[in-house]
Image (cartoon, helix red, strand yellow):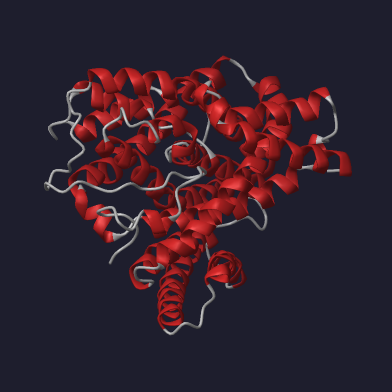
Length: 433
């Protein structure tokens, strides 16, 4: 990227900050705007060269995902999970595996000759959801808080849960293609074990250290957030240095950190969330610059059909099966099923597959990219009108959880939130007390 591209990008982020609320009321989400702008800068003004930005996209997206995984996991403490545990177990323990299985089977049926490993890659890479793409849903008071919270916690945890599956799928595909120097299944499992161990230790030590420093007045409030930002990156890069899975380490570290950091933990995590939100804007812009033209060129009826089915049947049917008998109304189940947008995590998984499998993953990467591209517009444009419509017809409008406690608000990835000090007065806000 040249000086002109960097200058325009910074100005676009500034202008977006000035008019983000107004554009949001017009159903134009940040991913929609920045994907379109990226495509215009690349194809229209030609100030971004797609051939020179692939590595930039990969690095930027990986860093963003590390912060997102750490922050999302840190925000979802045991208290939040206990508030409506049955619903989360259904979505993550039943609905998510069924979605991966359905996506895998559909890929094997639609793309004859595709190996089971590539099919599994597609099913797993497109299973995690991204709440930021349906931001209007997460901030709309017409939508019952229980539903918003379920969508947000599902989005915060499912990308970390499927990361091991994606890693094993990539390793299996590399073995099946006999790629020299490619990852192996055994190696992937060892990497996952290393990532798990590093995440537990780093989250425990980091959380306890932050808590002690805060209690003894050693830590400056102005620098505690940047320190946690650096910790998340250090966990990721350190795990890579140990030849482990850095994404798993960041996710697990976030979960453990939230438990040991104490009451002040969410204040530091808030800074990580805001930084990840900014960097995600740049990721979407570069995704639009690099991917749109390529995806349009590679789009045939199979790619488009799989993408449409992935956003509808492959997501909605498993959710309906997982939520059967839990007492939610049919409109609520359909609403939760539809708002499963695919976003940043899916893009990262596709880039990892492309790096490890080279041209062997072209078809799978094209499908993943097309699904994300369609999701950006389909979920972004439908979020506000469908949320308003659902809010007026839903019989399941009570914000109370099944155990009788009203859950507090949970920040949405990539959105501007109120300062965490304003949230501490709300029941259930933040991490464990």
